[in-house]
Image 1 (cartoon, rainbow, N blue to C red):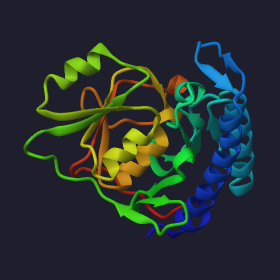
Image 2 (cartoon, rainbow, N blue to C red; image 1 turned 90 degrees about the horizontal axis):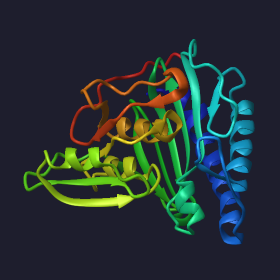
Image 3 (cartoon, rainbow, N blue to C red; image 1 turned 60 degrees about the vertical axis):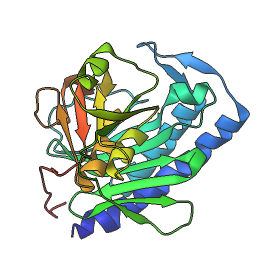
Image 4 (cartoon, rainbow, N blue to C red; image 1 turned 60 degrees about the horizontal axis):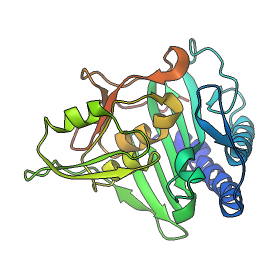
Amino acid sequence: MNSTLYNEFLAPCCRIATEAGALIMTHFKAGGETRQKDDNSPVTDADVQANALITEALKNLAPNIPIIAEEDELPPAEGHSLFWLVDPLDGTRAFVRGEAEFTVNIGLIKDGKPVLGVIYAPPQQMLYFGLVGVGAFSQEGNAPAKKMQVRAQPENGVTIVKSKSHPSPATQAYLETLKVKEVVAGSSSIKFCQVAEGNADIYPRFGRTMEWDTAAGHAILAAAGGRVETADGKPLLYGKPGYENPAFIAFGGEGCAYIIEDDF
């Protein structure tokens, strides 16, 4: 077991995510102003304040580990063998629309691979967390945590989860190559968790995403036995120039393609 990661990082990150979620919910209930960033994506006070809470807490937790957070000025990607990726409010568009489909995401990358992930959905008080080599878990409120495991792909057709806010013709074209039983649209990184807990089989994403959008969910899915590949079948890696992801497909079934050593 990767005891260092579990004891020193995973449990504290779960607490940090839930604290950020409580802060976000005060804004969700009160409403607030929305602004546009340079890339035309929306940002709210909830994004900014949750970002500050999480990054400050991670600095206190692990002062020597760099933090790449969506609402901060981004440092160059090169040269970091170990770093955090933080999306303080994933699903901002749903948040702005008043829809309860948004999450707090904290992921840890080692040598280009996600090894630890925490996702918290504040409206549902649902916490998902995982550590590659240990396992993936879900926890609702104060209930006991439950272990998650991907399922084998059903012979009668797969269940697909896809983005509600970012529809893509390329995604539709990909779906036409599969035997599909059901398609479920949703917002935020919860789509990774649906695959990790065996409620869905594939999450394809051909639109633009950033590394902080996917790191936590990727780690949780890998810890549950799944995998994430680029459209050409290679592992999705992190620390890329500009932190932008290519198209990717997240799979359940068997296939976590890497392990980590307890050398932190």
